[in-house]
Image 1 (cartoon, rainbow, N blue to C red):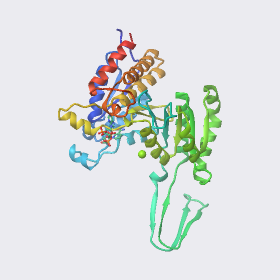
Image 2: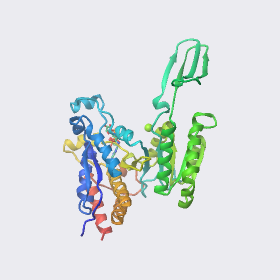
Image 3: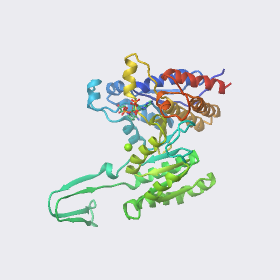
Length: 404
Ligand code: NAP
Ligand code: MG
């Protein structure tokens, strides 16, 4: 069989622990036999990040700006224990945080829906994709403990000019607490743009919700910036694509989502996204079935699994024990990236290959062959539990038959 060729490279970011093991098996079994892989490889494994003073992460992000599409393996975000374990020079920052800051992106998380792994909410038939605004609000707040009676004020001092503003937050009669939050118009606009673009890209409706009736300036600004951008740049495109933009209050959105069928994108403010993405992923069955893509308003895409490096399984693996780690989200990171590469390069063969690999993965599970995490929650009777490698090999067999 002639291998599929790629005209433009894809940025490949390797990672850590169990997902690094899966990464290699996926490449060997599911990609390299079928595609002449053209990747620019960056090793974001913790050892290499430490050796390069984390420059490798910055280089990988810059390469993503150059080529437009990246696929990333899960990586360790160091904490004190990791500094000791890997004898690190420094407690390096989260690579995802570094990459997101450089690409200015929004993260979209979507569950992979298969028959036999049923969502807890029985009317959810299609995936619900969560987009979380990753800047500001409570995550960049300042807080103060108020020990005793007194006034707390909000003061704006303009740089070199008049127009100072002052508001009384509260006159305290006793002790209490206070919090100051901010956000930036251009960050909200970037977020809105990424959401509108991703909705068009995936042909799904876009929902957005805030509490603008209570927060008449702060949340209202989010609502207005989304509405303005929609009217100016996206209304016609959405109508052409047959999709809608729907704004409502956050509590109304939550109520409707419980009754909805899915198949749309839910854009969330930072805190709502933090909370709701965990609810959605757990309700859809498994973190191991969640994909994640970072979409920048400049049109760069970085695909990955939503889960981490699955450390516990890695230590079993190092001990020579058998593991049954779910590779589905990592496989879908590759298919997402290959399909996007194919779209940008007008490489239909590559897009078809991505579709077939996803189909092979889903039908392997639906035929009853799966990893242990899924076997524990499936509604299929007598599932066959496969180890990490054998599951990928089973997908390869399906893939070969699909590709003829
Ligand atoms: P994790 O790697 O997501 O794993 C947590 C637990 O979830 C696992 O122990 C396992 O449960 C289950 N699980 C997750 N993915 C699975 C899969 N593919 N197949 C089967 N089970 C799976 O989270 P963590 O243990 O909190 O973090 C480990 C490392 O990952 C940390 O160093 C963290 O910094 C990093 N991390 C990276 C990213 C990223 O790169 N995007 C995201 C999150 C965390 P059982 O043990 O019960 O089988
Ligand atoms: Mg959370």
